[in-house]
Amino acid sequence: MIHAIFGRRYTFSAAHRLHSDQLSVEENRLAYGKCNNPHGHGHNYVLEVQCAGEVDAETGMVINLATLDEIVHRTVISRFDHTNLNLDPLFEKAVPTTENLTIAVFELLEPEILKTGCKLAKLRIEETENNFFEYSR
Ligand SMILES: [Zn+2]
Image (cartoon, rainbow, N blue to C red; front, top):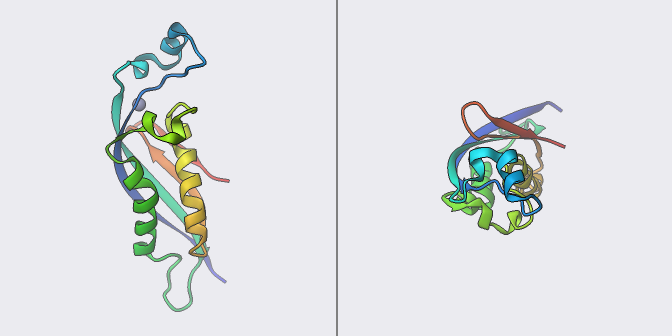
């Protein structure tokens, strides 16, 4: 069996405000700086999904690209694109930092990708050209 990793990038745009109900106004300002601005701000996120699996003997592929696109659009892009992350039930109690977003997206995608016979090897979200977050199990 030959194993390989297939990676694909997606983009979506969303707004968030970094604010914790556990912290005071001053503590929030110190922790999050201008990201605590009450009106929020937006990012053009770049999502990178890496699937690991066997290279199919007949197709020569780890996962069908169209299948992965359908999964990512259905579970992630349609849910978060052009939304306010703070209003998503996933962030009712968790601050929508990109660390928490990366883990939430991983948990949404993992069971769907497992159904194809592949594993979700690693997930990466770029928040800005300088900041990126990665998660794997
Ligand atoms: Zn931000």
